[in-house]
Length: 286
Image (tube, rainbow, N blue to C red; front, side):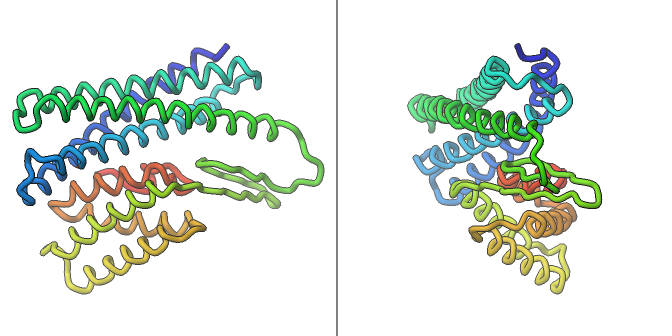
């Protein structure tokens, strides 16, 4: 049976971080509202589609964060490597993701309860799409937890002649010692790459039209953004390079008065990458 301390740790970590997810989501939905209004589609299907993209991505980010916090909890409170504990972990992840999905559905209904332009059909559709995404995430992370559990079991077995450690997955790595080494494989899907490129486009526009930056500083930061786009498109990712670029970009965004939307978009897009470090380190908070 899973140690109750793991469950409590994950639940509390998710509860606290959910506040930041909520704030970032609100900013991104506001951006959808603004873009739809400028396009004359304040009550059209384009706006509903924009909400769908942001809500589903937000739920994916929350599910990924829950998975990371489960790994951290297991480092604090190691568990027996048996099937029953793995099954409890799967159940814990599904429970936490379902709670986040239910809360997002509540926010959708609350947000549009007086929005006649939307009506009930698009709201019901958004809630249904979140249910579908939740079911997909349940299947995805059942597999991911199984892979993680198998990796943990293999790592617990000593291997003669091995000088380093090979770790596969979205994890933070700190290895010490004269002969320590590590290999990190960061797997990023097409949707995550697209979300990052879209966020970088938003950042680029924010910097390009800001009147708070000197011309040379603007040129330099825009050059970094373009390099970040190129690095994002690479099949083989360089976490160290991406970390440096994201940090530099965010340091500039924090100096701009109207950068909240761009910052929220970049923070949300960066989470699935993890960049071999915690996303909230790679992308500083405002």
